[in-house]
Structures are given as structure tokens and as C-alpha cells.
Amino acid sequence: MFTEILQKLSTSRTTLVAVSKTHPPERILALYNKGQRIFGENRVQEMLEKYAALPKDIEWHLIGHLQTNKVKLVAPFVRMIHSVDSLRLLEEIDKQAIKNNRVIDCLLQFHIASEESKFGFDETEAREMISGDIFPRLKNIRICGVMGMATFTDETRLVRSEFKYLHDIFQHLKKDFFNADPHFCEISMGMSGDWQIAVEEGSTMVRIGSLLFGPRG
Image 1 (cartoon, rainbow, N blue to C red):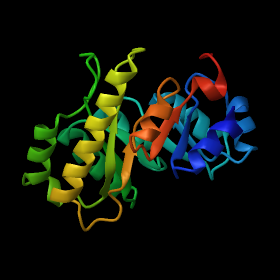
Image 2 (image 1 turned 90 degrees about the vertical axis):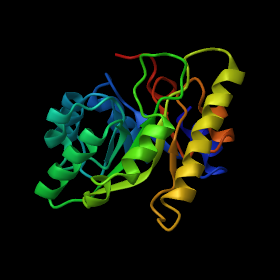
Image 3 (image 1 turned 90 degrees about the horizontal axis):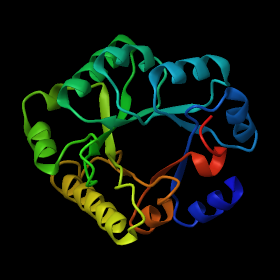
């Protein structure tokens, strides 16, 4: 399945983030040995344990909800944080990035699903934050694009419309705030059940777990 997914993604130049949550390091190493280098984790503690146990050329992406008090734990090594959902969190990432002499890549998470349990900005909130006084002062974070999770449903029309919506948000923000910034280029959307729809709607990063690793351990 890994090779098949890579082949399909290669035509769209979409990046595969292999979501390894709950799976042991040996399973990750098996994909690593096939050439995969980008892995995503939902939980900080699990990421720390795997970072310590696995090769250091792995790019770790934090894709789950991140509490501000745990930013300091991943700041020394995390490659990208997909789940930035508040100015307060961005400020803390910037603070910890400064301490580690790093610039940390971040995606703004948007609430695009019908489920209330999902985290994320709406477009108005994001615009207000970017236009505010604090955001321009954050020099050790780099906003690279947007992230969102579609509704967990078999209604493909709904999922497609939510992905279209996220793509529209990306385009609006790019035009109005990041037009001259080549780093603002990522749309992280699509998981094991809907990644092909996401790619059709412009995803540049898909976060796939169960299709690669099987059911959670």
C-alpha cells in the first residue's frame, strides 16, 4: 500500500506524512527503510519517545492538538506543527524557538468540519490575528500554510465541499497576507479515508496512518 500511495501522490506532488501514532518504533523503521522520512504524531510524549529511539534524519510533524505547556518539549527538533489554533500557542512556539535558536514551521489549523469537537480558527479569526499587533513581531515562527480535518462521514460531497472551503481559505490568505512569501504553500488535508478527495481538491500534504500501519496498536 505504501508504494501504491506514493505512486498516486507523485503525480500531484503531494507530500506523504506517515501518521505513526500508537505504533511502535519497529513499524516506523520498516517504512523508514523503504525511504519514508516524514512521520506525524498526535501526542507529544509519544513523539519524544520515538524521536529518542529512531534515526535523527526523520522529519517529525506534530499533527495533534498542542498544549502551550508542552511546546518546550518538541521545540528542539520538531520539523512542522500542523495544529496551530490560537495566537497564544503561536507566541509560545516563537518563544521556545528563540530559546533553541530555531525558526519553526507552522500551519494554521481551521475548523472546516461539521463536528463541534474539532479545533481550529475560522477565517475571520485568522485574519484578525494576522492583522493584529502581535503577529508581525513573531520572528521565529514561519507560517507555511493551512491545515484542516473534514467531517468523519461517508458523504463524499460533504467532505469535498469542506476541502474546497479550506483551499479557498488558503487562497484568500495567500493573496491578502502571504503573496510574496514562497514558504506559504502548504495545504495539509486528507487522511486514510479521504486522502484521494483531498488531493483532487489541492492538498499538498496528506496525513495517512491506518492505510500504512493498519489499525491502531
